[in-house]
Every structure is written in structure tokens, then in C-alpha cells.
Length: 171
Image (cartoon, rainbow, N blue to C red; front, side):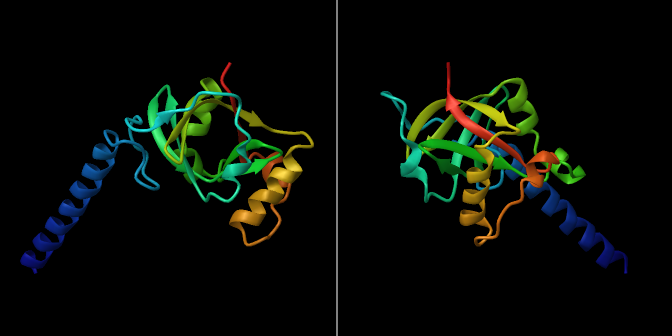
């Protein structure tokens, strides 16, 4: 019995060490590792030119963005509407969401980010949208892309459960 307990304890320790190693190692990676936050972007071509029409990104499933303070990158969903680009963040009224998702809170303090889309780097500012007529078409697009066409209710935003950010031009 002692042998079995020692073996199980050893296996648990190995798993914990592997997970910790991946989480720590990801902070030094060129961008996120799917759902695991990563480090600063080290590859990509800086975008120069006029404000893009983000319609080209309409059917992309995810993009990456890196915050400048703290320097950390992650993968996120996106929506476009009338040439503008938006990202959602859900579960913000749940304990798990508040623990797991620090970036929205950090973005309200310092919204400067770099978006990496198809190898291009875009200097942007995350601006939270809490109300207004723009929300209805953004929520419709969120439903179209990610919930199988199920509508996302406005209450998700007004209750604080779902935060919507525009990736606005950096001033």
C-alpha cells in the first residue's frame, strides 16, 4: 500500500512540475500557446499605413494580442463590424473568470496592446464598450461565429458577465 501511495504521489508531483514548467516557459515564448498566456511577440511585421478596414478578419477564428503593461500575450476571439474590430471576454462575473482572466482588468488601466493578425503587428488600444447601439451588431456577430447562430443577449454585457473591447487605433 505504501508503494502505491508513493507511486501516486510521485506521479502527481511530476504532473504538477510539468504544468508549472509549461506555464513558466510560455512566458518566454513568442506569443501565447493557445489558451496559455505567452510572452512578448518577437516575430511579425509592423503594420504601417492608413487605418485598416478590418473586414478582412471577419472569418478568422482567433487572433493574438500582447499587452504592454504587463507584457503578456494571449489568444482571443474577434468580431468585426463596419470595418472595426472587437474582442470579447466572458465569465467576468464568475469567481473563476475573475481569477483566470486578469487581462480585461489590466486593459482598463492600460489598454495599449499589439495585435498580431496573419503575421502583421498592429499597435492598438483596448477600449471597453459598455453600452450603445454598436453592441447589438457586435453581439449578433459573436453569436454568428461562436455560438452556432444563437443570439447573445444584451443582458450578458449589461450584467458585466461579458466585456466587449474595441481594438481602437492607438493615439
